[in-house]
Image 1 (cartoon, each protein chain N blue to C red):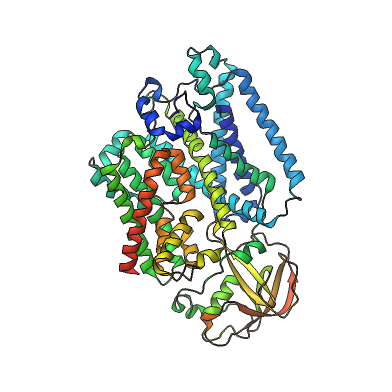
Image 2: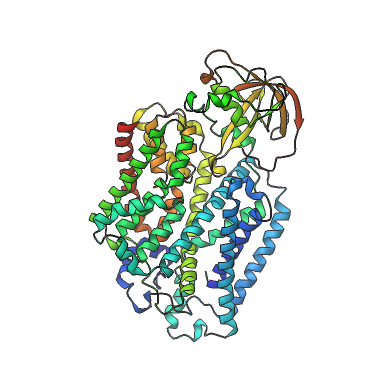
Length: 255
Length: 357
């Protein structure tokens, strides 16, 4: 890979990082919202580096610096022309993320992953985020619906020994996922800690509405069906839907 | 360090240590000459045309393909690959820039003052220094290379490489958040990672040979402008590490999408096997060290020691990292360093897990 090519590869890579973060919300499909400044900084740094390398080459070309054929040791030059610059050929793979961003622009993970990914665990100890936190459900009026993330909802449902969630109307947003093992379907949302590679799924089981199209997004209002017996042995928390509205894909598909 | 001419690229890799060690003090072993890699005029122009064509193909491909790609598996794979690449990119750029700054702006005498001259004393010091670099493993590889370039003992630089991604404050806080109510997990991770990193450093100081490592480029021309040294160092490191990072990302995305979680869960109740299984899972999954605690906590079927193995092995040995190390230090290094690191990480996992968890 000659230096002009190296410069152009870095410039393209920088352009890919910048166009997916500074000029669009595409990056939300892959990484956390808070990651945006770092992506922009990295993209800008790559772009500046690439441009400066290309500019250096262009200046050299204009000044008519001696090309390889006029240099003395032409024998070794012929060899080094292909691989003597210390640039491994694998560096061409840097174009793959560029292609991924500009050509494929893959969507956020959806029902395929939700069916296969690990589901969120019950909170590690009931004392940690239970207790005081559970007392305050937020929400405006006593009976107004409470907007919750699915992650919060099931976290509460797993530790809600006092059943404070019971009877409260809750509003959840997520996408539809089939339940291959039995009745009903899941309203799911993927939760990511760092990037889409570590996504885990949070989901509630819905049985009192017909299954909508997979991957369609819904905002549902309804109530928790408190399970019988030990809360922490529950695998899927059930949710009784009262109203259900389709939504456009939320700008941040993860929670 | 430019590869020696006269051998094809794969052959150079196979015997990198030897072929380079014999000749790397030749006069042109320093910064490449200024006409290094400059192609003939027509070729330089041809490069520009090829990339212009590539850009047009990108645009056409986007218009033609975007509605035709519907395979769920492929799209999930592409999403995970893009996510790993984009997520690692800022860390790589940051690490490469830091390494270039160490090379260009910090005088070599500084390291001689700060680091103990004796490698056995320098190793724990380097491990402790790893606590302050808030990054993931992609950043630490180029930084360790930069340290070696400036004359820090390889054993100490390697200890830093292993310790920094595992025990920096960001990672420890993330672990504490993920394992809320289990502070002993944070302590166990700190102890096991630091112990393994220092042990590997000491073993390397005792047994390691310099010619296993691809020699770092000799010190730069003292007359070259610092900004130019900085730029050349960044370009060199990015070109060497970047492609391998993408390679590791391809492998990790494939494993992530193809291997069902049930396979992993199937061994959860076997005491020793489960630890080894999660260690292997950490190697192939290549999750960044700032996120791995959240993945570990989701593996609820497993014992705390098995989760500890995931947290200790992941930042030290994973596919992405192996590819990156191979690109930076050469494959004859990876062949020896990776098994050593894996063994040390597992031993410390079992010992610390037995004591604390």
